[in-house]
Image (cartoon, rainbow, N blue to C red):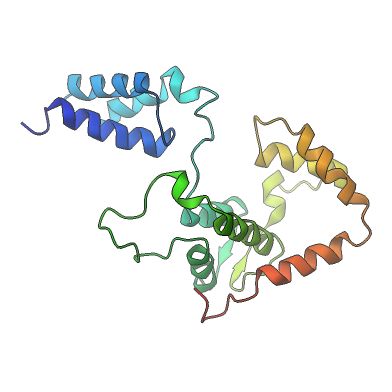
Length: 211
């Protein structure tokens, strides 16, 4: 009786849509998914097919709208760069610093699956610091291959690198404003020193006592 109740279809399909589409999925998509759930006797595979073949799933309002949790961000970044984790503790520390200390969320439902929970000034700063520390090889026990982002091909110039990696990291986005802001930095003779100093600050407090 519970499995076939309309409220069950609505509840489960909303959970799925929030996980894979956006924090506030369109009602039209939810209706389609719930309809499939009821007609296919709760077949989640069919519900997922309905979701990914719906135009709402591919709309500009939905694509890349989900915010990764700190754990997803850290693990996804290491995987994307063909990383090797020899000592996971420091990576665990970074996930905790970004706001997701594993197994410490009080509610049994686990950490929320909505971006608003992860987006605040401190969290965003720690995310940027994590990216800087990872890219400059300052996370002990974690080795990465930056060249893997571009299949082992190194751009011909710093300007070409902006365009190449911009397209990889921010696909489907207008890169012109970003490139315009970052281009002046390329002529700064102290750029390498500034990055090194910023990276050093980002890794401060990541010892065993940090959380």
